Every structure is written in C-alpha cells, then in structure tokens.
Length: 269
Image: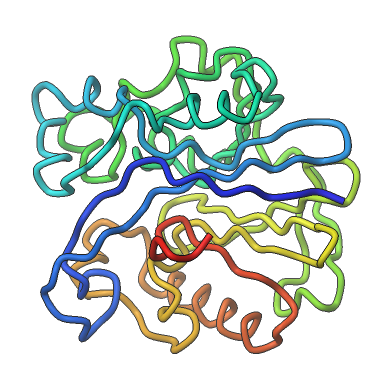
C-alpha cells in the first residue's frame, strides 16, 4: 500500500473571505503543500509548493504583479528539496512529479528535480504553454518556472485509460491508475483551473484524496460554502467549481475517505 507525507512549502496570505464567503477581511495564511507518495516501487511527488525560483520568475515586467496581489512567504531552508533531503531522499530519487495544475504555487519547485518525469493534464498544459506577460499572470502562471527541457520530460494523464473506481469512492466513478498497481488513481476536479486534477491514494488505513485547490479551506466542502465571487475572475469555471465542490461534499459525508487540500490551515496535515 502507498503512503502519503505532506510538506508545507511556503505560504501566501489573503483576506479570509476570498476562500470562504462571509469569513471577513482578516488576513488568513494559506500554506502551499506538496505530497510525497511512496508506492511499492517508486517515489512520486504531488506538486512542489513554492521555491526560490518563484521570486526569480516574478522579478520583472508584468510578472511582478503576482507577488503584489498574492504576498508570498518562503524560507529557502524549508524548500521541498531540503525537506526531502532531511528525510534521506535526494532529488534524483523522485521518479515522477505529478502536477495538479500549472499555477505557480504548485510548480515553483520543478527545476529542483531535474531527473524526474513530469505528468500533468494535456488540457491544463495547452491552456498555459503559450502564455506570457499579463495573460500568464491572469492565469497565475509564471513561464520562468518551467525547466528548459519541460517538453521532453512531460507526459499526459489522458494517455492512461479510465478505470472504474471502488464503490466507496462515490460519487467519483472513474480514474486513471498512474501507479500501475492500483495505489494511485488520478481524477478530474474541474473548476479551479483548466485540467485541474486530484489523486486518490490507497494506504494501509484506506483511501486519501489529494484534492488540490478544489477548495481552499475545509469548510468549503464540509459546508458547501464557496469562495468570494471575486475569485472567479481568476478561476476557470464557476459552474464546474461548484459541481466539484458538491462531489467533495458527498465524499466527505460518506466518511470513508480522508480529504487533503493544498491550502487548508496549518494545523491539518
């Protein structure tokens, strides 16, 4: 069975009401997490969090708007690369980087894992690959974060066949087994970004869903409570977002799956 280990890799701050309607204007910390997935025969990473490369990529031109709108806090000693090294894992030990989507807070550490394969949604890649300047910033994408050899290392989730999921994962019915062993199934979680993905991971104690940015706070899926309407200026589809939120709500009510969000509060894994 696989295991999942969470790493908090920098954070940003926003008014709480951006994540939850009615939560007020008080500043709220949103940790950016990466998840190490250890399967029977390989090490995978789900996203990377922030890195020092974020500041390099947002230093000039329209890209400077990103940290102005979204203040980012990052300690280089706590990069994902360094946290993994503290566990005896080198960057070259990582077999595959699985990207939930291409927003900067999820891909900023790509350059720190030069030997790893990269897997993502083809829809998500097509939505960002030609963007630059203000058009990129509006999609929370910084082209400078992509490794020079990205095209040669990138493969697409859509190449894996859809398979039926176990009944306890309803209302999710199909996913793509990227582990080859039934331990990691990637699923579509549309709404937040083009090609936005999540992953069901089967561990010794049952299933965990890495739900990425399908919600920014646990109250979102527990209470069916959406974010500020302003957030949909940068999110991909309001209708799809709420459809996905409703599925997370139903999954939560089923009580059989642990749901982990990238930005849930710091006292959670």
